[in-house]
Image (cartoon, rainbow over the protein chains, first blue to last red):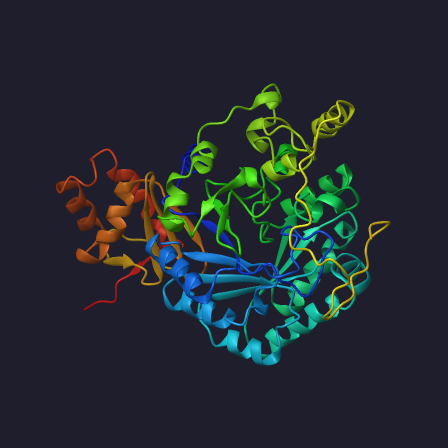
Length: 380
Length: 96
């Protein structure tokens, strides 16, 4: 039954289940692995009026809730206007933040709102590990935001961690941190997307760490994952979730300038489906774009056809394959059976071109406000 | 949580939104943030009709009579209702 449902889902829905809407490319941090290469605002970002019209469209499509992110969404002066407009029109809001702007006053404002969920990003269980990827002072700012939410009586929020080679050993500590705040823990997968393209080689977990992570998650069905580790389901019993790539089928992204992409991890022309500014708006892109129509047609297992695990992992993450230069109808670069590593070696030997996201909206120099970013290794 | 009974009156929970889909429907509970799949249009019709009939059993019969649920689908719809009660997608109607 689950497979039938999954295959029906992959052929298209009336509206996305998990719609991510990045409100701005601006950010006051410069995390080394940022999936959207955020930093500088884009002058073409949707105006307040345009954004409200997007909310109107989402309401008409009966989108239940929207995942708001960025960049750092709270830097938009109309942030509270927009989330209030959304929740006032039947569209729930879950937003993701680095917490630097989540002051006690902001926390009280959020606590007074219905249908708003907050997710605070941290990537280390203490400052040293976290700040190595997110910048000096970022851990302290995140903890302060959590304290502010607690102080305002906000109730449960989410702590969201991108799993890296450096923080896999800290999973128990993250769990304890979430428990201490009465928060939910969310772990997500690092993709080689955005600035992650340059840091992925150093940051992505090893095969052994993937096995540890899988075992850890299997014992904790209450830990959220955004369905991002379904490639690990090839290790045994499937992890909870749909266990398939939802890009263009179950999820999609609206970016700060209104472009619609198949998912937040493929900010690349090849996966751009259209724009909310086109005639027909978001609804037309979701329903009729050539890209989404193609993604919703049955796919072949390709090079994975002979592997007994294909039903469990469905070939893994499209974004991870794309940005490591692997074919989309073949193994995930982190395939638990090592087929991805073999494919990468072969692709490297053949001199294959690897698509690169480019600098995007990354800050050109040191970040002016707030934490100073300390690059990993020799990256500068 | 009391058990589901076919001779009680139920209704879709007011904080649940149901979106029709080709395969049936998606039900989202704005309070619990839970998303549930309603696996057939017939089941969606039954859930949406519960408030209009004195009991769940009456609702099923009426949906079958009206041709919105086939006789073959009716048992599966009936079997799904206890799960929907547990998930708070439906609730007992206050009497009156």
